[in-house]
Image 1 (tube, rainbow, N blue to C red):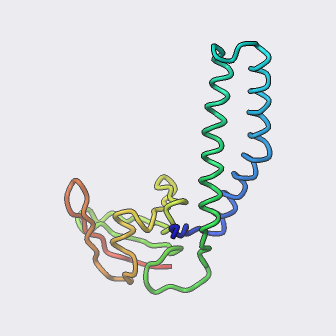
Image 2 (cartoon, helix red, strand yellow):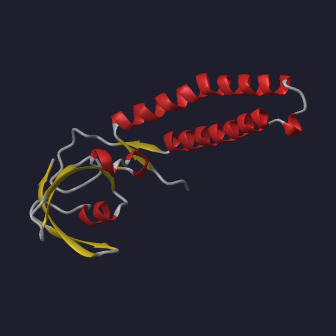
Image 3 (cartoon, rainbow, N blue to C red):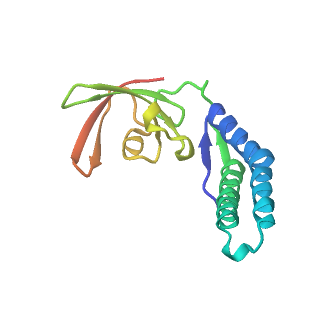
Length: 155
């Protein structure tokens, strides 16, 4: 059985748009590059042909990956009220040592983007806070040691 892919409506649209672009535009672009490279003559010693074939292989791999993610997609209901941390929750955490606060949105691994404060439910912090409620102190094991966070709010 394949693993479910948890996605927000925004994440689902982003992946669907990427897949459509790759299939409708990028495939044709690479096919044209391969055709042009073949016109240069012998393909066994043709770096343009080799590069285009490698790009085609990468593209087809990405298309298969996106199709699998979308096939196993489970849409997150962001309007559902949560009192405990779940996928789709917006969480404010306080580092118990530094007192610094962080805001995160919990998403599935396919949508994780730490630079945009979207962390996966499978990340160390995500795993530690899943199903915990406001006020709970959780411990996260990291290579640098154990960190403690207090859950300030869950939305």
